[in-house]
Image (cartoon, rainbow, N blue to C red; front, side, top):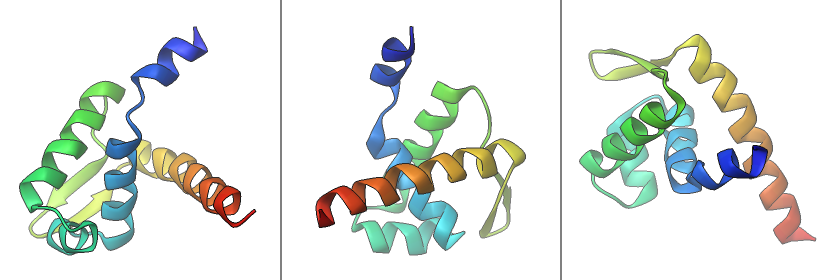
Length: 89
């Protein structure tokens, strides 16, 4: 069962979410990722659909993590920090 869920996890969606959460702004995240703002929005929507929860409250131009978003960010931090550690090793 766990491997089926892992297969559904798209790491690009998760990476885009992680960058948006750090920047708290779609345009800045898009610039950092070298993609369009609409591409970032689409990736975030796909991740939210897959998880079944909104990850951000959208207030004007800034984004604020929801409770679920904060939980997902903790996992994303661990995943991408471990990936960086792996590459350094």
